Figure 1: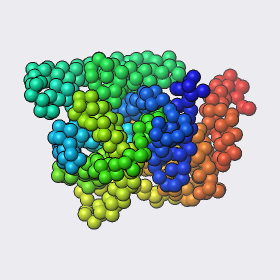
Figure 2 (figure 1 turned 180 degrees about the vertical axis):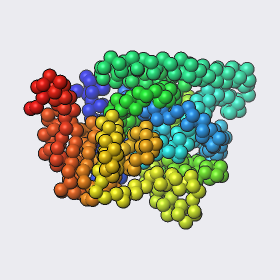
Figure 3 (figure 1 turned 60 degrees about the vertical axis):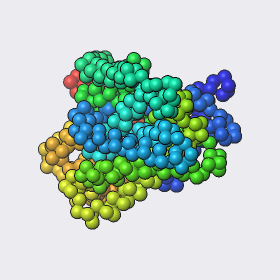
Figure 4 (figure 1 turned 120 degrees about the horizontal axis):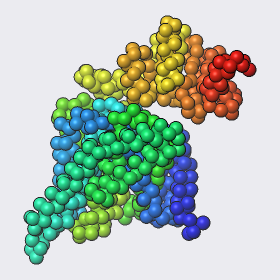
Length: 556
């Protein structure tokens, strides 16, 4: 099967193995990313058994990068990007410069020349966007000040890498010290002008044309009432803009997708677009980690342990420089710890830079093995570094009397149990939930809402309604709602899978609680009742009853 249908084999075996190993990792209280990476090692060319087509896997992984960055852009605006420019532009540039210096020092210890060390260090300075985004999503930090700084930092890193890719070819002769090929400064100036011109043209096109065309197209499709067409429109926008950015403007596919999402973020349809792209985004993001794992040759740990540890040290020290820079700019310890730990890994752009360096004979083949080994090791240990950074933050911040900004960030993350009793807990503040909340408040009934969508949370803030930010399917979030003292739980979200989990967990916490959920199909009604719901309201049936009332035929 694998020889006749390599694409199906890659998707089936890679996702299946990633699921198994990711579940095992989660069971061991380890990040599922570790399981995905090990799945890649298992299907890679350096281990026995099935070997996935590396070229096809990398292409599938790029789709994951596009969808992930498009999703990030949907929760990020140009205003957010400009608000952090004072830190991220000089900060990211300084961090890349430190990495280049560290790489030069490491190369000297390995017996490599200055030019090799420079390219080597630059390759180790660029963090994986996918890894950082997953870390922010898992910690619900995408829409915090820290999340905005991390995203802005990655955008600047990507732009600097694009600039490096453009400048390396014309400067390669100078770096190698080749007297036979003098550097043509006119060629360098032309390359720079072309790069900045293309980038400016792309940004201008997105701001002037994309800002009007993309939302208009999606609004038109939304009014057709076809969910299938709307989902297809969202995916088409993400993929086509990313592809055009790379092919026509020389911008990375990640940046192209990010700008497409950022333009659409100003539309009221941005939340729906994010929901529609989420399932595919998660599946293809898993393939990204599998593709990284495939590149790793475990034998490099045996062949060159000292050189590998030296290379890993450069990547970690580069991230440490990001921590120091953030602190020097006067930002809270919590922000510096997140940046330092989150950037302590390298990924997709590092491979591209390394390949270019080898093609220009600025890097030896051995350097690629060290960079790949460092990438998978750094991504492997990154979840543990983030956990350690969080533990350190909790230990140090209270003793250091944090600034008001830091205190606010901590308060945003911590799940403070509610003090309400005899209250109603409402899960979801969308179209249905907001109407339920309005009725409860009019009746003077104590209300607590559980919600995680940024726009809904903003509306709750404005309305002055007490809420808990998070996914109610998580035990800690539901426990903070004080269900044993509640009178009713309304599960107003449309997602049947999450509703099932919430109902089941709530019933365990309070066996006598009245739980009312919503459903779309008879099968969902039966399923929710079976798992502990007291009553289930099916919207379509209630609409039919209301319509029949006007004909005098209401009732059963």
